[in-house]
Amino acid sequence: MATATPQADAADRPRLRALLSFRGRYRMLHLATLAFLASFVLWFDMAPFIDDIGEEFGLTAGQKATLALCNIALTIPARTLIGLLVDRYGPRRVYGALLIFAAIPNTIFALAQSYSMLVVSRLMVSIVGAGFVVGIRLVAEWFPRRELGTAEGFYGGWGNFGSAAAALTLPVFVAAVADGEGAWRWGVGFAGVLAAGYGVFFLLMARDVPEGKTYQRAARKPGLQVTSRPAVFGLMALQVPLAVALGFVVYRLNADFTASTPTGKKTFDGVIGDGTAAVLYALVALWLAYQIYAVVKSNRGVLRGEKPEMESYRLSAVGLLAVAYLVTFGAELTMAAWLPNFFRTLFEMDTTTAATAAACFAGTNLVTRPFGGWLSDRTGRRKLTLLGLLAGSFLSYLVLWRIDAGWPVWQSVGLLALASVFIQGGNGAVYAIVPQIQHRQSGQIAGLVGAYGNVGGVLFTSLIFLQVVPQTVFLVIGIAALVAGLCCLLLPGVGEVRRGGTPTAVEGTAAPVPAVTG
Image 1 (cartoon, helix red, strand yellow):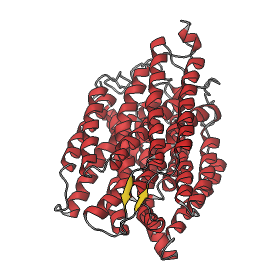
Image 2 (image 1 turned 45 degrees about the vertical axis):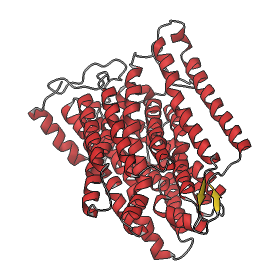
Image 3 (image 1 turned 120 degrees about the vertical axis):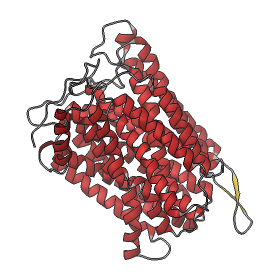
Image 4 (image 1 turned 90 degrees about the vertical axis):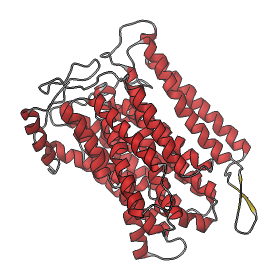
């Protein structure tokens, strides 16, 4: 394991300063980061206005929670699909097309006239959350291995700031251009225009790899390739929680829980009937069957005992990082969608003030996620870094469990900001490791791990439907962080650095990507 050396210190300082550069590989890093930020602004453009939307359409608390769930639902299968596409066709085309496409359902959402239209369009908008996967592969193509944690952390952190940017800027924009019922539509529509415009710009300006380097495309297989027979069955098992999460979304769309309105009438949260739900359940089952078929077809040779077609790598690393990301990114998704309403209810704030207070969590992404990646690079002890951040998440959420209306607002905001250091730093630590597991398939691996982050979002958001005491959400996230930390004790060494700064030879990792001057 590595310890700090004068040489490492000297290498770290210029690298951090160089993040401000717009030349060479840093230019490509900033292009990818802005694409990610645009996708997150679009993805979370609903959150600041959820109460306004609820008032206009007469939605119950359950229906608003269902919309929040729809906002992350299709990101689960989309991340696995986008990972496959980016490994095959390259980041430039995939990212540009995704941003342009997502603006279409987002516009439909802005013009929606019924709850059903809100739900369907929001499900389609959720696909844009898969954009994160594209940048992971793009950044890995442009940066050497010892800088990947810092670069991926910067990309993820400043891109994730898009959720805070949406909360901070869209209500202000709406207040400047419109007023009264329906004003929120201007903010949502504006986010779509920005995303589509940047999608076109990205197609024109981005490059998949540095000049002189060949983009290593994955084999034309329908699924991720593994290198041992037990790993084939393990990969099949990893598909099941994704399907369960999708099934839960269908259940929520079909749920017919009643809720009392101020007039005393009963309303229903369900948006689809039993017949439609049965069809959707069948589609989820078919999707799971196809995913298992894809695993088998892509790994027939391994199942027959033949020599793998690629360098050996440990699927256990993928599974354990997926568990860690389920907690870290799942918590982040839940906080981004839920905190504005939590602050508004607990402290009786107006919409703009509550959104600003909630931004204390997502807003720190500018520093916290890059910090997790940088710390992983700086120490070289990637596993220990991740374990420490998960432990900090457990402790901070345990304290948040005791929050109540008697707390000063500044204290609540400060503690949530501290929790974000650990939970979002954990995101950075996870993706300091992910691209180093198997380079040629890093898009697919990033997609699978990323999909588990959305599973975590579905898991934690589902607590809202149970009408638990709101603080229970914090407790569950804290316990989940503890469990993830215990699981990651088994994490194999990937990208660990020996004393003196030399990366360990890890099975399945590609040769270090040569640095590109700039």
